[in-house]
Image 1 (tube, rainbow, N blue to C red):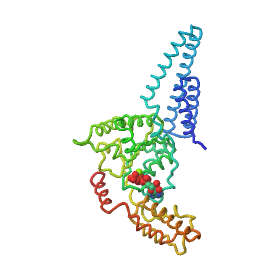
Image 2 (cartoon, protein in one colour):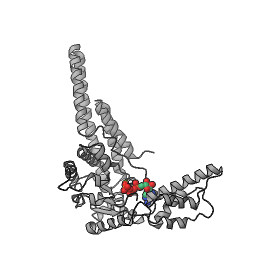
Image 3 (spheres, rainbow, N blue to C red):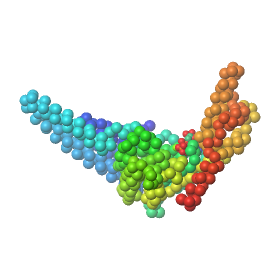
Image 4 (tube, rainbow, N blue to C red):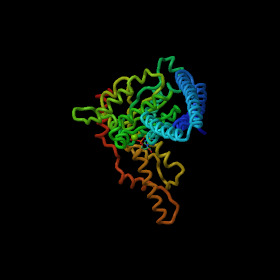
Amino acid sequence: MKSLIEIKAGHENACAEFVKTRDFGRAAEEAARAASVGFALAERTAGAVADAHTRDAEGWLELAEELKGRQSAVGSRQSAMGSGQSAVGSKQSAMGSRQSASDRRQAEEEGTAGDEEWLVAETPEVSFDDIAGMDEAKEALFDMIVHPMREPEKARMLKLKPGGGVLLYGPPGTGKTMFGKAIAHEIDAPFFYASGAQLRSKWHGESEQRLSRLIQAARSRPVAVLFLDEVDGLLPRRTGGSSVVDNRIVTQFLADIGGFRDSDNILLLLGATNKPWEIDEAVFRTGRFDEKIYIGLPDAAARSGLLEMHLAGLPLGEGFEMETWVARLDGYTGSDIVGVIHDAKRAALRRSVQTDGDPQIEMADLEQALKTIPASVTDRMLAQYERFRQQRFG
Ligand SMILES: Nc1ncnc2c1ncn2[C@@H]1O[C@H](COP(=O)(O)OP(=O)(O)OP(=O)(O)O)[C@@H](O)[C@H]1O
Ligand SMILES: [Mg+2]
């Protein structure tokens, strides 16, 4: 079943489409529908979140009125055209098409067209239950983000404002991206996503405008999560030697994000990185990524959860000891563990094809997989994160 947020997004998109084709009448209807879903959202929420939904719905109502006005203007112009000579009519329609081209250009400049590829304005499927273990990180994220968003009245009584900036940092493959998506899922908010690498490579030369539009798009929603993945690539440290582009993108980001705590809408700025030392210092200052959470290697409980998740219901050989594997996988990241299990499954399949028997995963399959897949994170890397934490966030 579609959530109200999705239904509302559907009307908003339809409205934008009708505006593009200059069908203002139907655009007005869609805007009015977006408004009524917005009011329904306000009724289902409380406090600051409800207020934000109400203001947003009122905005859609105003837009609906304005679009109705434009429809009657177009209507009367068209009937005037109809009564004139055909030569005049064709000149006017030529003018009309030039006009719509310029409208389109303007829409593009405002970022309402062509952004679909990197703009994920919907709630992701991944939830906290899909993340094995990591209880400390989950608890911290619930305290900082989920509770204030879900219980805005209680948060208000404690003068806690929902939203804000949180940076997840730690070694590769530990579930940072997963956490970011799961948070958006838990608070049922539209989710705007950009990865540093993608933004930099794909939109080289205009990355800062793209980032700027993304931030504006997220801020135009009453409640939204803006997830900047691989922040290191997006907002690199500005040094004497860094490129003009790097300097520009960081400066633009600081300008766009500045003061998001004071604005009416609730924006949660989430970042993830495995190279926090490469990020520009200004990004960590108050009002941006205020909170930092280390996402490290999975502990025994998390490893056990991962094995459960990926081996539950599968044919395991006699004498397969889960506990042994929880211990053997110490030092491996979540992503490594998924890889090891995958390798073991392939080996079991290969054997069953060769022997023409039923497949079964044996301890030896995992043992063999461990030999070919080394742990991707070294002690030296872990020490680097620890040093960084003490120096910068300590
Ligand atoms: N705690 C976990 N529970 C379940 N799956 C996990 C966990 N940690 C990692 N994984 C698995 O590892 C994969 C990679 O995780 P993810 O992409 O979130 O890592 P990351 O920390 O963002 O890495 P990077 O720093 O390289 O971007 C996930 O798709 C998932 O399959
Ligand atoms: Mg990631």
